[in-house]
Image (cartoon, rainbow, N blue to C red):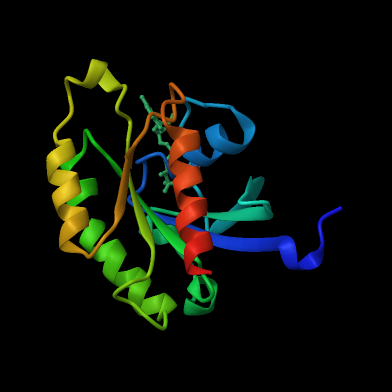
Length: 181
Ligand code: GTP
Ligand code: MG
């Protein structure tokens, strides 16, 4: 049995434009399921995943949020105490990349962390499978440059549909959140 001191709860908040695949990423990661039917998230909900990292039992509590403005109803109390913020965009959708600045700023404003300059963010570029990569409009290089411009944001590219890199991305999230905890 794990002793209490070896148990850690990490709160992760996932943000990004509507339709980029936030819910799909979480469903693939936790339930190994993908649904091609779009169903907008309303408000926010969480899933949990148990992990073992460095001999610690870690519970990753991942909060999925609504990208559609009319379904956003989260007060700043919701963001407080977050250990990591995951920003998601769609590599085939330029607007979803351009609005990352807004999501980043909004998170820092709402969560108001002690050290905003070093708060851990992870960026995920999703839907790398679409059209075999041919409809992609944001390059890997451009995304990495954006991460550098904000400090040191870790970057992962995923396909929630094909289950490419999804485990790796969330494991990266868990590590960085744990380091900040
Ligand atoms: P909101 O809840 O409105 O904020 O959207 P969301 O970011 O949660 O998007 P969601 O996961 O609902 O996915 C939107 C649509 O994109 C759905 O039809 C998904 O099936 C599809 N989708 C998600 N991820 C992928 C992917 O990696 N590849 C492809 N081809 N489609 C994806
Ligand atoms: Mg959703």
